[in-house]
Image (tube, rainbow, N blue to C red):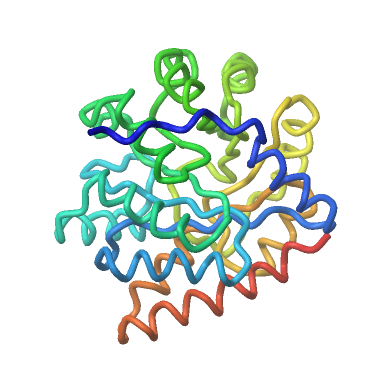
Length: 275
C-alpha cells in the first residue's frame, strides 16, 4: 500500500528560516554537498554534520553526467557519486536521513533531465515525504517551469530559480514571478567553484535584486572563505558555500576525519554570517 502523502504544511519553513536569521542579525548559511560523494554513507554523515555545525539550509546535489553549471570540483563529486551508483532515490534518502535527525531546512539541487526521467509528480511527492523544503533546477528556465511548479505547489515544496550577473531585466522579472522559495543569485559569470576574489560590483547587484524581489535572495558560486561569506552576508539574505565544502570532503582520510573536517569548516562559516 502506498504511504499517504501529508498535506502541505501551513508554515512556510523557508520564510521562517530567513526571518529567524534576520532576527539574529545574520544571513542564512546554505551548505551544499553532493549525495553519494564519496559514498552514500559518508554523504549522509556529512549532511548531518553540516546541520550540527549550524547550517540553516543544506543543499543536496543530485548527481548528473552533464552538470553544465558546475565547475571541476562539483563535476568530480558527481563523477564519484555516479561511479558508486548514486541515483535520485539515493539523494532523497540523504534528505530523509537528515530530516529524521534535524529540523534544518533541505533543498535538492540538480538538473531537469533526471527529474523528468524520474517523473515530476513522483519526484515532488517523494521529495515532500523525505522532508525536502525546496528544489533548485539550474537548467530549467522560469518561462518553462509551469508544470514543475504545479507539482511542487501541490505538496508544499518551494521552487528556486537562478539569476546571473548577465540576466536581462525580462529574465529577472520572470524568475521573480515564479520563485516561491528564494532567488539564487550567481555571483560570477561562469560555473561553480571556489575563487580567490569576487566581483567588485556584486554588492551593488545584490542590493538591486533584493529591492525588487518578493522572495529572499541568496548568493552562491565562488564563495570559498569565511571572509568572503561575511562580506556577502551584509548584502544578501543567504550565502551558499559548495565547492569549498565538497573539496574538504574529498580530501584523503577516514570517513570520520572527512566529516569532522567539513563540520569544522561549516562552524567557521556560521560565525561569519553575522552582520
